[in-house]
Image 1: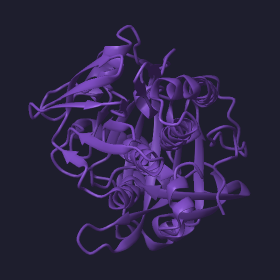
Image 2: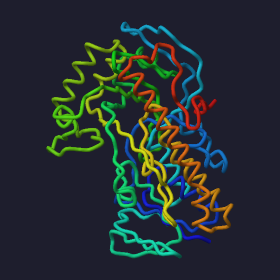
Image 3: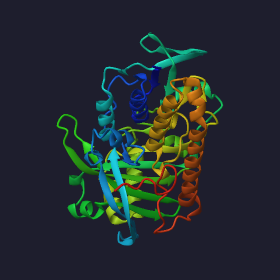
Image 4: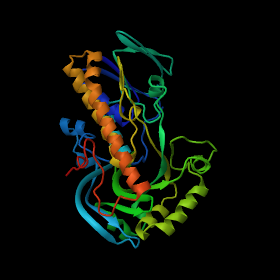
Length: 395
């Protein structure tokens, strides 16, 4: 029975932990945060890979943690629908899926406040240093520590994240924050509006209230806006405490002057229903759109999965699905190799590298079409998908 330590306890790490445990491994998850990763988070477009653990185990009906959209709609500047087509997408929120994954894995081997601070590999094991001072040995170290992966920086020190030239503003809007008719008009749909060198989308997601477990419907919006690297971007990514953030600013961290400028632009640039959604968001959050490509994911008894390996732009809505697929395929390789970790990683790596490169290329093309060339047209299908466009459809 291989002993596995997973570095990072977010969605990718938890999904890998569940599949590896199912494959017969003894799994411990080491999460650097001292508290569970529960918050509003952002919206997630589901893919069958994202929820494979739940659908295979039948421990949870996917409908219980998701909402649906049966229409893809494009708006004109007045807010009128100018193109629509049937679709079958499901959406969830970070906190909804995180809670269910953690409940399925349990907390006995989910170590909060235990960051992996160092690791060394020997032919037969990996020694892992934890922030508490503990040393642990394992047969396999799975690095699922996200977009700013310290494991990636150590294993591939010359691999850099690249800024795409634009940012994604995000927000969560409650039903009571906008007129009821606007909330109703945007329900059961994923709605797009195309601007010159920009676009915005909005879709419904479920939020689970902590304590009561009550699920309520809210809207998640994303507005992609170009801003070149330089002083303007630095100002935008500097939080209210004066700290320059590399990748993201959470709700409550964005400077008030930048929120005011966003609201002013929403009023002048967006259709009225979408402007209402942005104006209703008093604490939007912000992400600098980045990408990163690796040429390796396996290193003897150590591997990178999810955003710790490839960082793709959000346009394919496949980040969570890619991390889940990495974990599933890793567990399959461990089983096929009868627990021989090194040969399992050699078996696993080529297909996951190919998948990462495919998603990265598709998201770069989508970003170029929408933000640079203005060739994304009203009525175009969405680039959502893991292996190919369209495979995120879920009835």
